[in-house]
Image (tube, rainbow over all chains, first blue to last red):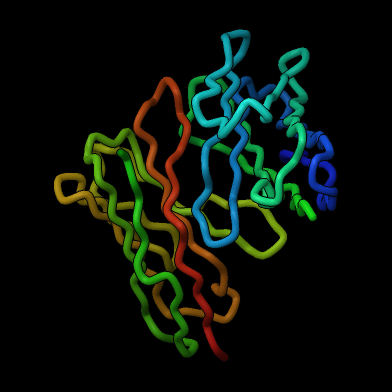
Length: 114
Length: 113
């Protein structure tokens, strides 16, 4: 079956521009996670959606970062006024209800801010 | 602060060798621990999941152990192959209801033919 998909796979943007990254989770998975992997760093948790509950935004690094999940499925991570330090791989994962520890990861979006 | 550390950062071995990757975590009150594999340009693949009540898990040539009290886990790879070359990530989950993972920086493994 289809796994987690992310688009675009690569994104190059200029400093100060806004970018939107998309994640399509596995059908039926109620939990969705965003992570960031900067060069030489481990994966950093950003935000977590579970069903209709309020999202856990505790990992968002600044108010330039926001995410939405429409209809309990597709999610968009938006970075406003991008900075060079935002360059990283952004990974999305989803998991089925009741098994939050088993996350299936997408291939990631590689963001480069010039 | 909950941190996960992986040693070594990089490892190069000849094909056929057995090897051990290490992971340590600062807060021993974990819910579970996972080992992932990450290939360039691809997402993460879960290799082994150890619940906090377990001591080890095995899958094929892979064996992962967990010592919660000392805050350590090891991933043992037997008879390594060039196809094992990848970055191996250790991740700890501290809350079953929340489920976000705390990752180490990974060990980049290269197996030479």
